[in-house]
Length: 428
Image (cartoon, rainbow, N blue to C red; front, side):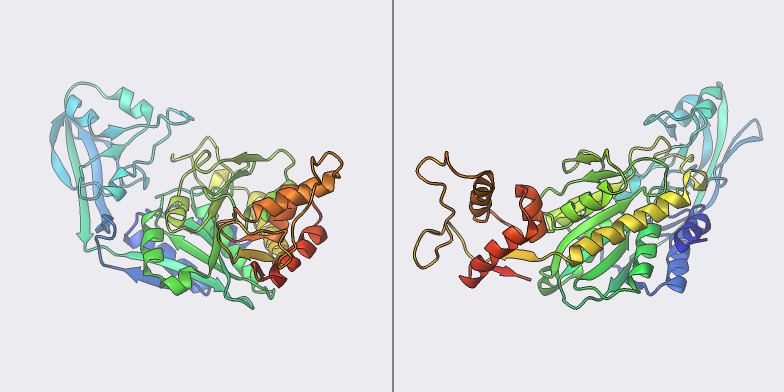
């Protein structure tokens, strides 16, 4: 069994809340098998984000007339994340205010949903259970004995970082999140694919440096990026979020908010090699995760997933929906993306404003003539490329430009070499 599959079967059942004993167990499992480095953050109050307490569930049940009708320890989703402790007798109306059932894909009336809100608003907490719709509808009038006992300590955020050192310090990040109690595809599969990828990368020398970051969704990335010195951030050329890559569903590719993501075209073409009809969406149109954090730090981040899938955010997201072929295919697509990246050349602009390209000192103007009517189609494309170079905000690549303007790599590269000679751009 590949490491990715082994990881999913070993860790899916754990109650992987942001800070918990089970989350620590998952981190330790990965550390024992990889070269991952654990980084801990303890200071709360970053940009308004508060690190949640270390939270573990000890006991949880609902009884009626002395009979146990729900054991909240049977599945990690059965008690809402960071539920407060509660013991008492409540009527049916009060109980239902604290019960949640699945309403997203409505895959099954037996599905238990994921209630995660309190992870992000841990200063505003209540008690509650997640139940199946059938359980909710089966409840009758009367009084219910409730017990939720938890153990809490001061919290911390532990993230894992894996590094594949390249010949240069120019770095690309792959990111996934390890939280989501009791679930497999979201996003244990993204972590597993990332780890398997980095095991494969050990066999190769690369030009670029690649890092894998395993975090608590959103908050882990925010703390991590804030901890980096600006000199380190400047080396990050782009990012890719990996999520939901084990299900037997098609790939979906989501663009960065920034137009010039260096990873987009290499990944798009790697995906086209295995999936002709590829769903491509604008930023935020398919899924939303840590992309927003990296984008807020001015780092373009695209997203690769197999979303949507019907078991999303429910107890049905378990190892039974994970296909080893899907995991392996995801790893191979990423290896193909990296291979394409490694043969590419990054383009960085070194000027501001608009240059007079027809000046004798520069002489890079693509002339279409007085009206342009006699210009060849290739010449028109070269003119569009020329104009575009003044608009670049973030680094792009020769392949990105060639694909964007439907020109050959050589044609674009030869033209850009002339720009580099004039000190207008840097190629690396």
